[in-house]
Length: 426
Image (cartoon, rainbow, N blue to C red; front, side, top):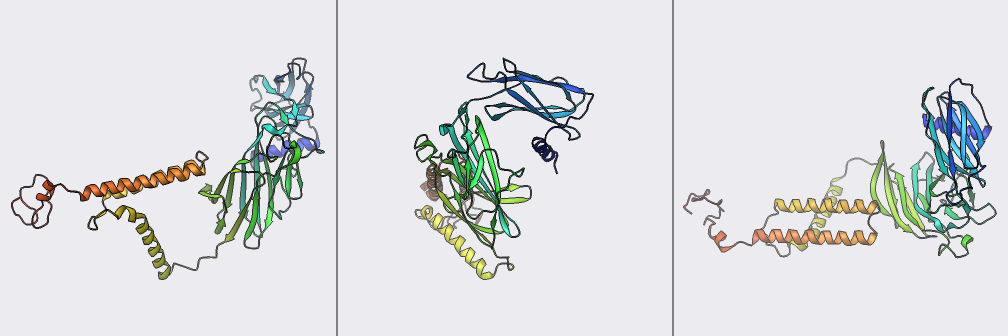
């Protein structure tokens, strides 16, 4: 288990089970200020909490309150240790940051300043930049890791209580198993009801990612559905037209364990490598609320050996036919006796590289579907026109050039006075 994982578990245990105070002769101090951005006196007399871990993984916990100006101070803290600071305001915990003292005589730290915000139930500042699915095949099931990023663009905390309708409703895969999380409990403000993850906040300014995982039954094939955010009546038809923001980008990653994927309306993207594992990837953009995207995964049968001569011939015929169809518009106005030059290969490489760059811009969200298709068509048309011009230039010879060709058919080099093939004078 990694040190980061141990630290996270230790902090979670500290929150769950209380406080331990290890003795240490080495003391440090943490001080800072809590600021309310719209009300200068709003940060007075609020609780500031400190959670810490020594180098021996011993937990530390301490609480204090701010003065009239929002200042706080913790004294006589053990070192070496790492500390998390947060402030509790209006029932919401606001993270302040992390401070580490790696040595017993670590120098003092500068003041740690952070903000608190008022609460609001208005979700109009919320957007959904991305949703991600990661699917991996286990022995008897498909394991799904599903996450969504929610961005709050205003200086306020968007949250509603349990008695209110959820701010966002994120569908899980149909027939999903028990939902798992990092510490065995759902993220704050998340409940699961009838196959839907209901999100009530809090959503602090900035971006919050909510992660859930579960299993899906596996009997060979997997047929499931990715659902965009569902409409909810919490706004009464106010902030969002359909009651939920659209998801700007959907990312689907499938561990390549020998599968065929039918991604429906999603766009195939470049495979992604994570260490020794390769993931097939699919992308979707601007998913409207309530939209459903069927996905089907079919394990491929094991290979039965090298390809037969029949399959090799079929592949060759298909490849030849494709080349013929692609090359036919170019060759229509060119003499059959003209051979393909090295310039043709340069044009093909340039087109291939340009198309690859175009696909990369599309996959990274820089181009819309319409822009990608339009630019792809323009690139191909320009490549065809350029190649045709070059071939036409090769076959179009001036009378002076044709006159220098020897009667034996050999084309001399510029400056030759005798034919290198037959020896006749030119």
